[in-house]
Image 1 (cartoon, rainbow, N blue to C red):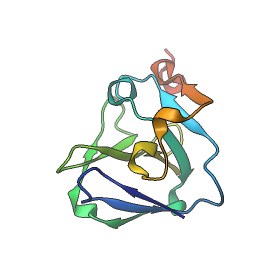
Image 2 (cartoon, rainbow, N blue to C red):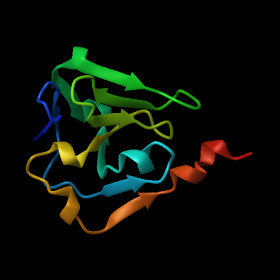
Image 3 (cartoon, one colour):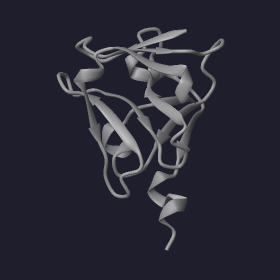
Image 4 (cartoon, helix red, strand yellow):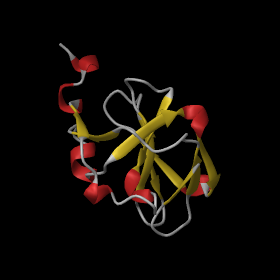
Length: 120
């Protein structure tokens, strides 16, 4: 079990993870390249907001399928549901106190800039 919290502490989430997190992701889509977060993913049922749900702000763009959540007080990106698989929750590893995302190795780069759902 891991605990996620934004910078100001208004938002907290419980992440049900067995053992250590195994996959670390960055994305080069127009939003992710600007926020610069290293993320990991779990099934939606393994991610639960336990404090501050009313302080979350939802941001959507382009197709408006993906849901990106930010703290309305400190502005920190906490989590999202990607449009490629809305049944999972991606979360900001920088919001976990026990992980230093700047020291992680083997970070997978997701090519969100050339998203398969955007093929013309």
